[in-house]
Length: 458
Image (cartoon, rainbow, N blue to C red; front, side, top):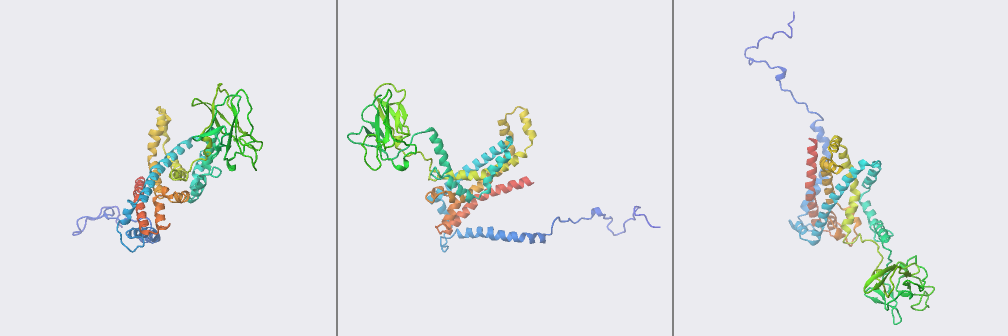
């Protein structure tokens, strides 16, 4: 008869330690999840090798090379780093980078937040997001070429100046005639007064005023110019402003000939006692007429603005506006990226919190400022820090958009690093020092992002 397994157990044998050890008391060996360490190392080794060749070695060598002079033969210690903070051109470069870091991330993050919030309230949100995000599909070099054309100073080529000149011409009808001047002489009825053209004798209604102008270049003659027409007498003060030049010669100076053209778009003023009493604009045939002008004698004047060059927009690629112009191009590229990330964070916000605030009587602005923005703060910080890193590394846009003559005004650290090392400077010691300086600037923001990602994973 066999003994039952669940029956009473025999007492322990003497000398056995006085106790039994069951399965619960035996330490169990922890089983490792995933592949063995040898297999993990085998898979990580190629990536680690490439990381060392492409990242670690260049960093170490750049630190070593930055301690030597341009040829690499003489040890200069920290001399290259001292040059960065003492050379005037280098300090201007650092100042430009500071402007980039302050302006670009704030503008991009703000626009991304505005776009993300507003797209929740429109039906065609997907199409809008696609349009705003589309520049991300374009490389920065291609974006630079695009904006180099956008900022062309000629309104017939540059979109920016085409828009500005269109808006300006909508509210200002004056036509510029640079280098034009009155026909002067003993018999002339007009003379120069500063930059303006004035009549020598006061005029009044019934006595047409003739103002002959010479020095008008053919290329600036308006297409709307018609054969000049001498004004006739009447009850209002009137006259004619025309180009007193007959092609091929001939014609009478100071008299309106059949082949001579009027000068349209000129501003004409009637001045009495030093005050402008009335203003008129010349027609296509150069004639003008003051309406509603009180009876009396007036000096007729063509103000100096008539003889200034026509408004052709702004010099976007000049030394004054080059940095803001490039920053705008950078914002155009990255605003869609910020919008998509912030929109994803916005979609994760509990709608109950927003509806509860509205039920409690909060306005939309209060909901946005006190609930939406605080809940989005982690995403906003990630976008902001990422944009800071990208602005510190910007190179392509500055190199492509800024003309060679103004590149020193738009220079940034990354571009200066390339220019000093390979763009003609041939000083790889100073270039290596700039590379390490740029790495030091970027590292804190990279560490900040990594720590935040780790906190979110825990």
